[in-house]
Amino acid sequence: MPPAMQDDLELPRQAMDIVKSRYLLCILLSQRIHQLEMGAQPTIDVDPEEYISPKQFLNLSLREIIEGNMDLEQLEDESA
Image (cartoon, rainbow, N blue to C red; front, side):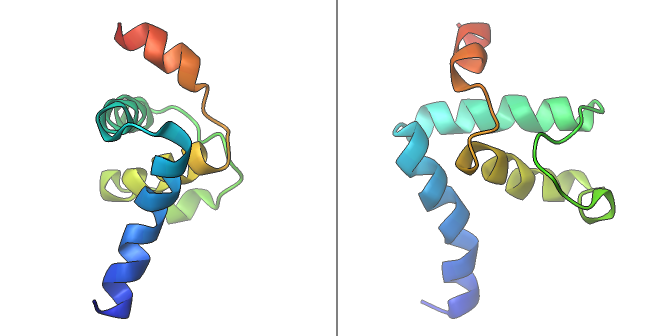
């Protein structure tokens, strides 16, 4: 596998170690990306200029999960 592709898969793998269910991870990411598109502020310390495009919100959301700055229980309750 090319090194660039391995790098692209590293964040999802790390997030899966935390969430455990790929289906729940998809739901959490979808909800968080929607929040970011609607103007929510990142919960981790990032350069605002780095995450201005919705295409970049996926990596930001994955990093929030990995760093433990997303309240997974609250998001699970909201999705139920």
